[in-house]
Length: 553
Image (cartoon, rainbow, N blue to C red; front, side, top):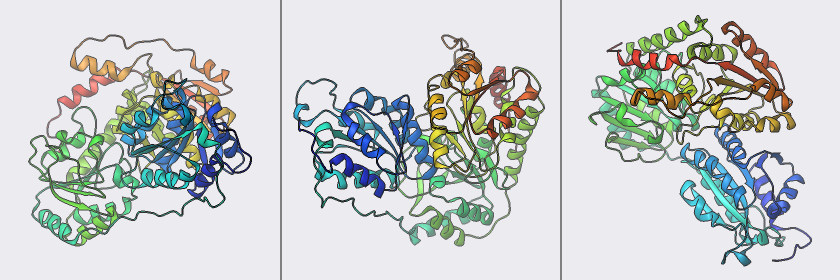
């Protein structure tokens, strides 16, 4: 192994490159093989957030990237530390979120043979990243760091992984080695001929509808989407990732689509002859549920070509800046009135939520928890919704008014991301209140990060829907097999558990207490855990009601 040298090293150069990229925070856990990188970070303006698990650190970085649009950065040691990053890295890639993961690796002098803590990390990360590579020398640092951020942040964004061998980390970095200048990839203007072809389809359409996805949200296409919807009179549904790109109280909104069974918004697509898919990506929602016969014409508007699917056969694709594409298409078609079906769908959702608000049962109904959560938060506050039954209820009922204020993992649908992710979201948007909403199963997967929040003085509020089981799995078991197995467990006394970390715990004991408790917790600048027992008997009742719903429009 090369001996440590005095003066500027590759570790110092890496930090210089991070600063040049505008990095303000790095999440992670150090190890003996990357201690010089950690020391260099400490000597820089970059904030290093020490976490209790590398997987949690990767979720923090992912949600930081999701909210800011800039790559979140996570760091770990080699071997098991790096492997622990993989779930958050895969989540970022499948959720189209920019992230750069950097880990240590054994020295190059022992990579060629069986060696302590050595696994081929570059190969392990390759299938779940946009790019995976090993830094071969200090001289390669500027180019590889620039490539990492350019790749992670270009459309379509995702995760990038870099391994830094321990002998490279201590290698001397020549004075002439500097961070490369940033070059931002700007989207192209839409093709006039493709806009013309799409306009011809829309002029002949009897009942066009619009589906807005994650690409519309992350490309800040909300204003253009409003202009387009109001001019053309199309009803607009969003995916889980697109929630808020058109406010749910807008006259053209018909809410969110993506529930596991037919929901109100699905009916808005039944009579559609044309679907305008704006920033939609197939991993968000299976198109078979809105185009079961594959017979609807589809106009695909995004910055890259559509994926191939039998139920997503594109008639016209407009590739380029999404806002510019929507504006160009708007100018090429005549104006139409406000859609009537959208109002009916909004009314159905609002009625369900209103009934929930008046439901005083205990344990609480899911609708009551969603209604009180919405009442406790401002229009621009941020809620992270974990995977499980809680996701189904929040995604379909929680009114959202701006993009990236309701954050859901729906590419990989990963459990346990919301609590650590809320720390990343708070650091990205310290001016917003941030709430993590999670089931009790997902809560205990990363509850150790309560200590991180307390130590780092990061305001954190967590709302735990407690049912002592994996509620979504039980729901699907009852629907599909009629039997339930291996989904129930016991919890600790969560308020005492929270107190052991130095946090404040609240246990809701009646329905009327939830809203004031949430407001108190959110107004506190400390760490609060609110436990709300939930009655999931409503799960089957909901799917029974939706299954019997015919032509509500």
